[in-house]
Amino acid sequence: MLAATLALGAALAGTALAGPSPFTSVGPLDLFKRISSGCSTSGPASCHNTTKQTDLCCFESPGGLLLQTQFWDTDPSTGPANSWTIHGLWPDNCDGTFTENCDSSRDYTDIAGLLTDQGASDTLSYMQEFWVDINGQNEQFWEHEWSTHGTCYSTLKPSCLPSGSPKGAEAVAFFQIVVKLFKTLPTYDWLSAAGITPSSSKTFTLSTLTSALKDASGVTPALNCDGSNLNSIEWYFNVKGSLLDGTFVPIDAPSKGSCSSSGIKYPPKSGASTTISKTSTATTHKSTTTKTTTTTTSGGSSPTGSPLPSKGTIHASSTGGLISAGTWSTQTLATYTFSGTTSSFTLSSSKGSCGVSSGKFSCGSDVSASTFSAVSSGSDLLLAFGGSTAFSADDTPSGSTQETVYTGSSHSETFTLSIVSS
Ligand SMILES: *[C@@H]1O[C@H](CO)[C@@H](O)[C@H](O)[C@H]1NC(C)=O
Image: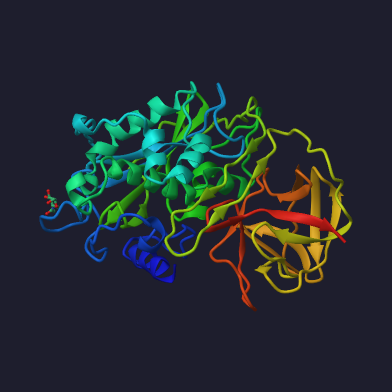
């Protein structure tokens, strides 16, 4: 994890980006438990070489401008009410032109079966929730994304994989990579942390939306609209080394998307039902990260079930819970005071009010209070921010260590927080 973080830091240092990167590292330690490319990540990023690169298993070319595309579909609604969904990961050429359908001999069918057979059912479950087709044709959608775009990656050619890799292993890797990258790009949470949540009446300017996303991510994405409705987003990257286990370098979108400069609507996913995300075991090779059950309330519905206690402790789903500064620890948990109702409340510890700033949860005398809600999940009462019960940290605490808690699932250890009356 540390090496991966440093690798991304180094990658960012070479760009014009300022400030610490909130991107979760997507480096070699994280990405692949199954396939390692043997490529170095210390060479030039894709589209940044000054000499001709000869080993295209270790240098993505010609499609070195990567776009992680996401949808915000509201008509009909697809996916969880508090998350954008995956469209794909596209390899544009460095000048923005692109090729598609690069190898029909690898147009695999039964992607679900392929993932299951090759031990990636965790990725498949995640896709069934977050990589969904607007007409419910997920399998066709996945096949299309693979055959149209996935077959064009030079570093994912079967000849670049270790010998003896099963047929389709590069497609399995592709879906794992896209899911892993998408988890580092929580568009909904980033907008929500800036107070931008779906509304059927409000309108936003493009600069409000892009600056909120740039503040959170460090880079400017491209936003596309369907009429005046925000409908999709493109997050851009170059990559150092192989897509299999390389370092993704976030970059600004080379041009703006199709949204006009003002009057942009961000409609709620009104039809979206309450969502339980699947348990997924992240593809780390060292530690097993469990994405815990996350309950989402759909647009404005009021949670029912356990009432909000006036005092209680806050327990993390995996281990430990929150201490008085709002950090995650396995030491004695702090007692929190709650004021309000499950649909809207503030909380404080002996240190002071608790709030979320730039996606970071903390409590203290200089912290301005944020509004939270609580959602019943079985017998648990889960803390939610911006409608999402997902929280994450860079590492799991042990002994006397404390970890910063972030809203959303953009950091590597994802968990929920349950409120226990005391
Ligand atoms: C970068 O490498 C690719 C692949 O070998 C090559 O096509 C391209 O011309 C190179 N760019 C430069 C500026 O040398």
